[in-house]
Length: 456
Image (cartoon, rainbow, N blue to C red; front, side, top):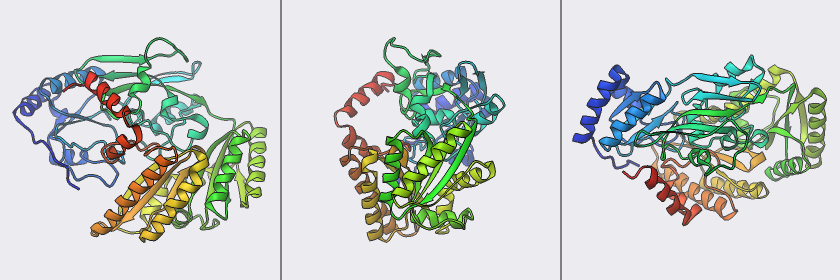
């Protein structure tokens, strides 16, 4: 559905002139560049592109850009790697796309303190490549190779969240440029503080609406001595979820525990050549620790799985086997796309208390089956978060209408169960309509905070 856009006016033209003087050829008005920056990877992407794209190289430069845009009332949309799924990077009101991908330095690493300082354009794979020789890693791993700045702005998580937490737990401090160009620094290197408001957490998940994140100080972890992975098939979604609940309740420190439904398993078996697996609800596990510890954890998890009807439980510490398994999980999105060539993909997510997860997935499955749509489900089952990927005919508006209806039902179902409309994709404009239903009067408080930091 097309969105209303405010076209460039005289003030924007003046702003672009000043930006051109500041940035030279790092300000682009080329249509191909603007188109690339006008949409993410979700099914959104119907708005006109931004008026221009600025490629910033430092916090001071971002500050100068923001001062110009603030002076001329020009909207600014931050852009990292463009992996958004909910329309975060679309220029709904025209304006400037501010690309921070050139701010890609790992500024410092402190192995003794288990922290590092990175610029916003550093990607998670780049960071972990730099950290590997130091025996360290950064655990937050959304499926895409997103920028760290974008991950902070959307409060991202991933498959490791059950053990290591989300971006909310992983960020120690930020450098943020406000709408008027002021630069603030939040948090610090101390592991705790009771001094004033927690501004770091305010900006984590703010999706660029309160300021532009330019630097992030992150919590790091040592690479485990031993890593083992396991896979187990189940007779039902309920059996798989009950296995996870008991695994967590008795304190097995599982690092990852992912659920793939039968449709997603069919896609992965074909796409990733997992011919030794079945098209049934399946859990993927990973355990971190000492060699003895991961053997004990895997054995205990196997006993629990088998008590709930799990079968063919297999575990391995061989890197090539582990990488094959988890590459298949990370490729689940592309595996699903391969099920329907040329389809429009709409990935979306909700999160519920883990005790409600089986019921939420079961009812969502029933809706999908009744609709006749093709929509595999995967879940970060250890924290109650699951994703539905609707695979739609781009030439059939009726299919999109069905998916929109099902998505609204799924969101309301999650909220009724004490959950949230999104566990990790964020709001963007794709789920903006669900905020009031989830937060009620809290939404007016959010609006007041926004007005205080950016009253224009």
